[in-house]
Length: 244
Ligand SMILES: NC(=O)c1ccc[n+]([C@@H]2O[C@H](COP(=O)([O-])OP(=O)(O)OC[C@H]3O[C@@H](n4cnc5c(N)ncnc54)[C@H](OP(=O)(O)O)[C@@H]3O)[C@@H](O)[C@H]2O)c1
Image: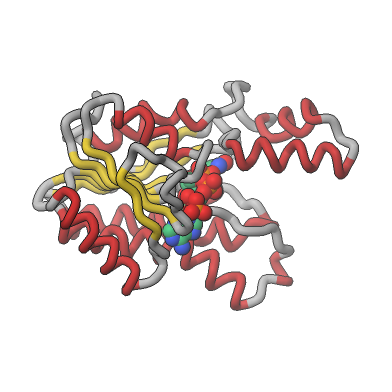
């Protein structure tokens, strides 16, 4: 099941990330694709309509909503790929500023974008990118895990609010080898002297299926989550059989 001939808003389209991968595919399938990110510059995707917006803030969401209306009127699909763990912190060293920021980026943005989408679509579909961190204790990324677990709760709850006209689902990947992650791994290899191969294998060691997950590998599942009429309020597991 693919998304075609639709008006699609993708949020969080970092270069070499999950949002960019799905954006590239959807533009080839005759969709009208709009993208937004925190610091979107006009040369990031010159052929795609885009705007910068801080999606943790109501006034910026309002600006985004007006822009989408002026560009395409309404949308059929929202794919939200905003998020990130921001940093590693020991659980007893998390301060309120850091905690609030992680919650804001990963959860508040999803809440505000979902509310916005309901104003931009009469019927349609919303897909949020969750994370295996929602289900697995990763102690130094605890704030991120809490935010993503909150997102799971939100998706499950909002399905009841939005049915039957709008479906809302999540896709939950394990570690994805995005451009940003590849860059960070190379830097870590140089800094620590641990080989890149070892760093990569450490990240996939809990996966029963030992392929490094690439951003574009998620496209099919994201499209399925967006298009199947059989599902709402569910989280699709893209963990390659990760054991937790
Ligand atoms: N990569 C992984 O291993 C992995 C695994 C599981 C889940 N995920 C989730 O998948 C999603 C995409 O991750 P990724 O690794 O592809 O992306 P990424 O490289 O971490 O980029 C995150 C995106 O979020 C945007 N963003 C951050 N704060 C924002 C804000 N306040 N308002 C608007 N946009 C904001 C960034 O904008 P700019 O580009 O303008 O900075 C960027 O486009 C995230 O939700 C992440 O938590 C990632």
